[in-house]
Amino acid sequence: MFKGKHFLKTLDFTKKELNSLIDFTGELKEKKKHGIPHPFLKGKNLALLFEKPSTRTRSAFCVAANDLGAHTDYFGQGDLHLGVKESIEDTAKVLGRMYDGIEFRGYHQKDVETLAQHANVPVWNGLTNEWHPTQMIADFYTMKENWGTFKSKTLTYVGDARNNVAHDLLITGATLGVNIRIAAPKSLQPSSEVQLQAKKIAQMNESDILITDDLQQAVYQTDALYTDVWFSMGEDQSVIEDRIKLLSPYCLNQSVIEQSANSNVIVLHCLPAFHDLNSQLSKQIYDKYGISEMEITDEVFKGAHSVIFEQSENRLHSIKAIMAVTLGDLF
Ligand code: CP
Ligand code: NVA
Image 1 (tube, helix red, strand yellow):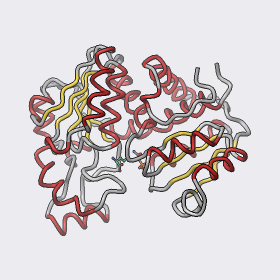
Image 2: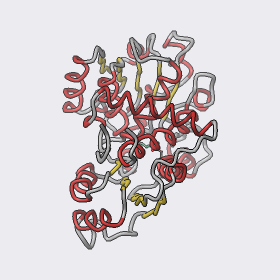
Image 3: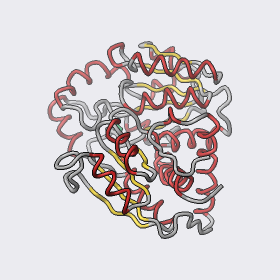
């Protein structure tokens, strides 16, 4: 079902395929926990290309590859001629003759699509400006791990809803039959194209979609609250002031948890998060704008509802599942 396929965006996969990746993530998590070897990619060579920084995605690909018996080479921004001194097409043809699989994190979705078109080996999207599909498998696995089912469950995303993660949650949730609500100011709501796609998909999968600037309506009796940074990698820092003004009412704080009126609500964040002053960027923002928390308060980030670090661990198991099924001889 998956062998030889690329993993570029969740839109390319059916509900059944996404569910099977989510279930396989759980199986691999169990294997790792019990020390059961799973060298499905023994002897394979993988190229990891990162035009943007990464903690979780990079380490998940490296550790997952190790556990699967594969070898990885890391190429950071400026390490390759990719798109600078030679076309992405030419680089793809070269890497595809040497490596068995290629991960790419970068700016433009069209770049990862071009790599995939010419590499002749599976290509995995480790995040672009448009989508973050490996994150989705970890996120929905984390939800299922906590809920046991997707049926009649609701996820509410609050914050900048025009970014890769919000767009992908909308599409992936609609595909899996999870109700998706988005609370964001009108100018930061998902693009009309993604809204339209999600609504069409939702109709086929018993998923309800609500996109609103009314935070209270969006969070009431939801099962999960999710937020992401107010400005994403690659965005100009000049947007920060405007984002703070627009998004401050959408901070995921204790009052939002209370407004959900659900004592079992879970809190997710893909990370990195701005929730304290222990990073260089958060200190700079504090010095300039006087705020010490942005999209999520420290109290909620560390609070009883948070499953954020389970979610980040699940990046490992889900990326392993994606690589194993597209490159290994499993089924
Ligand atoms: N969530 C996520 O993709 O994290 P990194 O940027 O650290 O890879
Ligand atoms: N929207 C964020 C996600 C980080 C994992 C970004 O693109 O920077």
